[in-house]
Structure formats: C-alpha cells, structure tokens
Image 1: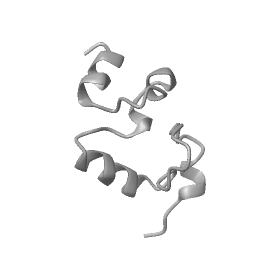
Image 2: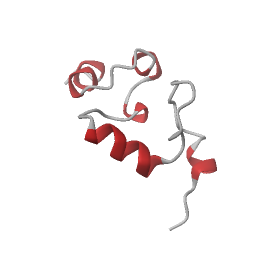
Image 3: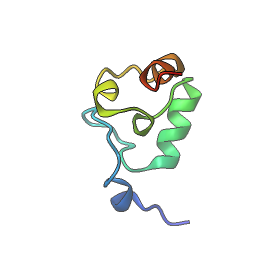
Image 4: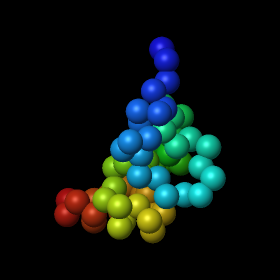
Length: 64
C-alpha cells in the first residue's frame, strides 16, 4: 500500500515542530495509541496545541 502523505498533509493539524510522523497516519496512530493517546487529528486546533493528547482531553474537548 502506498502512503498518501502529501494528501494527508491537507488535514494533518499536528503542530509539534519536527514531528517525523506528520502525514504518515499509520505511524502516527501506532505511536500515539502505544502511549495511550490519540493523534492530533482527533482534536480541535486549539486543544491540539496544548499537546495533551490523552483520552480525557479528547472527552473534554468534545463534551463527552
């Protein structure tokens, strides 16, 4: 399967400088789930910029 990194970059809102996984969704998802987190694309931009990618931050952001 070919990575569609260029296309993925159109919606990747990761603001972490130097992130090597930007636009490489499969690597990003694996990395964050292994750390019991969610990737940036699961959060609104203002919440993503806090770098709190926890499940509880996700629930707060979406009012769950």
